[in-house]
Length: 311
Image (cartoon, rainbow, N blue to C red; front, side):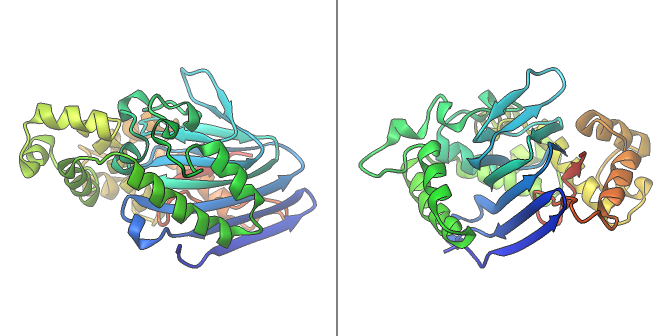
């Protein structure tokens, strides 16, 4: 079963919130990275900016809907959503009442579980039950063949521990019913993640015994981005973590493989919509002693600086 569920909650004049965290069962790791349950009951809308991360998101909506917007794309409003790898930030907004569970997956695990070429989903949040190769196409006598049915079952359970246990069971079934990602892709992704996106693509291809063209093709299929674009995401993810830990911009740029501080600044703005200083200022403000009704600035990945609470 999933590890012990940790919860945080708060109450104020504008409403209440609760957040629950759990790690998946060991049989699902390292493909399934974590679970985060959220229950928000506030008087007005809430907005968050989500920076690109080295993971795929499956949001299982139990109550309410989320509106996702990004520059250059039409906003979408969904109860449950699947969000593949992307190189740009998005803004999520809801009306104030929302309950759901966010499942973070490695891109290769998502490819194996859902069977959809990941480049078709890169930077495009979609209803998971409308994926071109949806789970229903592989359904057997078991009932867990779509996300809508799973969301209904989760909503009917009495608390977070029971919901996380059901997730363990269903994701184990989906993993077994799905396809298999390439062992070389898994290894290449692991190396790219381990090095924070600094491993040169030709060397990465040589590490797994492929040509650069083969690696690029398989990455687009099973990761969603080419290896160079995926490395950008992982490099900036590490940079945000170091900056949040108090490292200076020049030092962070050197440690993360940027040419200089200016290069870091350009990449930061291109991928988050703000400068490193603006991002840090917003996070510091969010971490200041809040009003009793304020929502916490909870990051999507443990130990990472992934999110900004806007309102």
